Length: 250
Image (cartoon, rainbow, N blue to C red):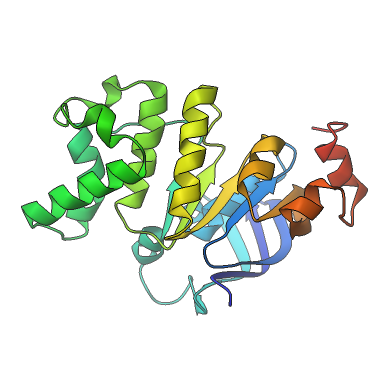
């Protein structure tokens, strides 16, 4: 059973080819990690998955992406797919409003108006992001006053407020300390029970700790995908993957 299927996906920005004929599948309730050198197309791939890439000027896409066997490029509005595939960016950005409003903003924009439902959704999202205990007594405080690690978990709570099928995280630990990183990793292990997670990481050991399967991107191509134990044992097809895992290229 496939949760997500990427079929011959190519992407160019400003006439520059970024992704080249990428095909792979993501299974339900797995953590799928993607590693690879800088500028290999990892972030662009994530932004294609929920159609955020379409906000870029002069973008050209070929191929298809299927979520539960339905093309994300169907006649539905793009907001449909952005609710089902949540995105957490590398640097946490709290919206300039209260903690509570940060989490409930998107559901309210989607038409949820019942105060009790919004309160329950906010609490549930903050708990799942391991942030509730730290902010429950100051929900009306400005979110931008939170620490970097707290803001990163707040962005996860915001993404979870959509109740997504898939949660995509792009190098979430790039700007936070190891203790907060460990807390978020434990959160992701718990969230895996409810959703599928796609994780782009620049930390090989993180992919090894968290993921069920791991993939290597290189020069805009997905060159290796294996179960994580085999992947980091070097049981892959391409020398570039082994060189990256062993730190000879970066």
